[in-house]
Image (cartoon, rainbow, N blue to C red; front, side, top):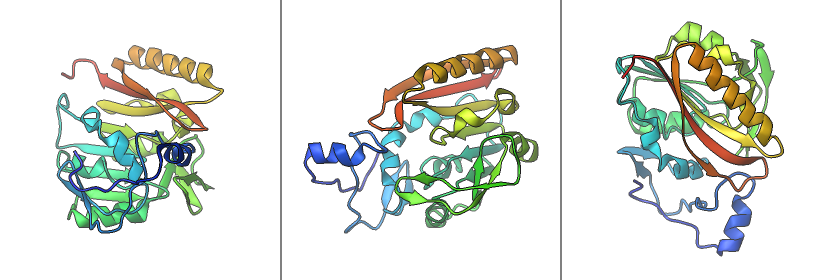
Length: 245
């Protein structure tokens, strides 16, 4: 739970309008004045960057790892943002690789604030199949620099993680099904795109069928609707290898 926070006092109708491009209305912008840091899950975070990510982190138990057989392994956090997930998980894993193309500076500052030595930050995109491809993107009012895009498959071959958390705001649709194979546990936030709801649900169904054939147990854990021009719903998906708890 958040222990130190100050919420916006804007009228609800104005707050909803301001949140519309990106966020749920339940997650108002936070005034940073007078706040040195925020404490979440026992970890500290500077009041900079897209603090609205804390709204989804209220559900942080979804990222829990009770059924992992090897908690001394490696966690791959794709879309780490300012570290609200990878920093708490760094206490559970020997190594955490955090992929973040936009908020990597804020992420690194929060890692230092918590004195975590086992998190490696990489300013990269994950998606598509073409390596060594440079691209830009925009999220939460900030543009990225030209950044290297890497296929998920190449990361898994290099890192060999036993746990993946992926939250990349719709870019997950660019990743081929077979590239997810390998980790013991896979956690994906699927963002159902407006006007493409049918295609997105079909792709999730196809991924579940594919992973089931590859000895994974899959589940849609929960979902919530978004007030966003681009995204209509977020679905929380888990896949774990059969026989692993």
